[in-house]
Image (cartoon, rainbow over all chains, first blue to last red):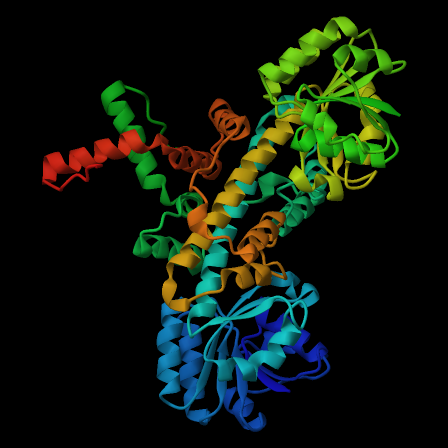
Length: 303
Length: 303
């Protein structure tokens, strides 16, 4: 039950803790010393000096979980690990890679005798306590090797993890999961905005969110988080109205286009995030100018 | 602890059962004899012959819960009840009325000395077992009178029910709740459609939905229902791809327009339902004809 973990960010560090608390011996590495230092008092977790030490100190057929940002960081770590690995070793990519990249990666690694699991991981910062939902792609033997770790990471040994299908299927399922998440959270956010706007009712939104958690159709973990946020009562003025997006929402929208299967709400939720990032500003300025040109409506100018 | 219930459809009948099982004595009426007959073996529920009998057989300050479709059926029942009621009686509208109608209704009834509670009720057919989420609007005294019944109907005496604010606030909160529901369920449906479309992974969607219920960010009651539906495995071809809409989604979209607060995902979910009802067909035909006219692209003709 030895596993190496590369990348000790928000997700990786807590997954290392959950694995260690579940009985695995964890060898961990992060290029940021501070990330490793945060784990130094955790029993059964040993932070090593680099990828070479990680590979050397794991015995037998090694299992290494990558918890890195998709793209270059993940590819860089794989490139650095390759000369250190042997046939029969298993790499598990728990990052949010595009599933087509994972399919290519699995093929390339298999040609070098390495096993690969693409692991979609959901659960966020609460996963340490509640367990992580794991969507796994790969051939059955690779999954079998990772299974003991999946059973610890998941909310229960038999629940919350699934061998979804061949390589790519895990990251594909995670991509769509996140697309759904975009739509669900946008719907919640819009609804609370409408509740807030009707001032005459002076609604206590924190209590309403709390009430909806019990027996309503919209009860959900995202609503639970909304209720927590509203209960904390942080002044909205202190939060910039800007919502970042990572790759998953964009890839889900691309999937809709590639398959020709409509996903208007998910796509709209993505577009709403783009707008929040100021990416509608060009169009908005042009619209304001067009209204001025045909209707003489004044354009607001910045000072 | 006596209450009258008018309207014994899917919601009303189960609310009558939950109230009776919780210790209330229920006098119930529905204009459909079959609806009353279905309750005849329920202890503590007595089905009466008409509204006059309902009013006569309730003692003291009467509490009558209307569980009727919004609009004419609800207004008709109120009109028929009015001559039978006395000052101090309380009417509770548990239907999905537009909150502005409820505000007017409360005002009109108060002028006749009657109390009025607008009660948004969520929970669907599962409310009998799990309890109903109740969003209540009205003046504090009216709410106080209804409170003992709310404590039985809700999932717990202290959870899942809320005095939201003055008259209209309950139905307003329920309207927005349903708008959020439109968006959340559309996001889920779109995601599963994209999962289904990528045939090469041959995903077991029932198992994936079940997996997501544990530890994922999208876990929710709507996902629980999706998992149930997929597990039953009914052939999709047997389900017409038509989604009805009741008033709540439309009113939420109107609220967005009236307040000038964007609700693009909720509105898009509503539009998607309209499309499913064939209400995009005019535009689609015109689009097909326009493509033919400028590009010579053939139009499909029905046989």
